[in-house]
Length: 153
Image (cartoon, rainbow, N blue to C red; front, side, top):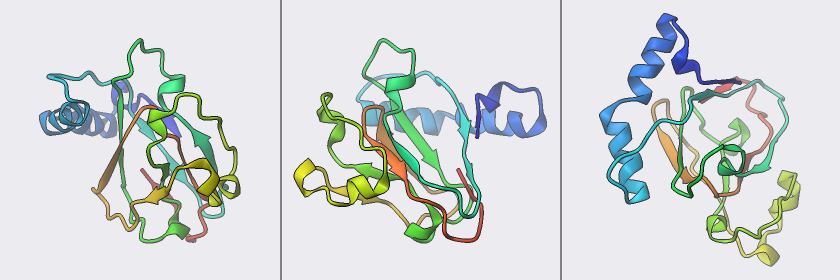
């Protein structure tokens, strides 16, 4: 994984910067947050190799040095994510409304979510260019990559 790739002086980084700062993407983020304008906090690349383990449950806003609750993450598939075996993001739907929510560190810990009040949602299948968006306080993670192919986002 890599962070703030849009700041590097390389041709791929310039392409990423062009996309990440596009008016369409900014308008989408502003619309989702109900605000007039947004700022780009960071860009990230996540490559999950075949047989790579799960990504533990976490909040994005918990690690950001921001003094706001207005944050949206847009996760863009760069390779096909056809099934759960391809390690799509899983979301604890509605968890952004419960700041006292504890972390569950494994996918297995979230499988039986009836006692936790949150339905688990995945948006697979995703094609390259498809995106998901989630609030910075939405608890999310991803299962292991059992697809045999590298998942890039």
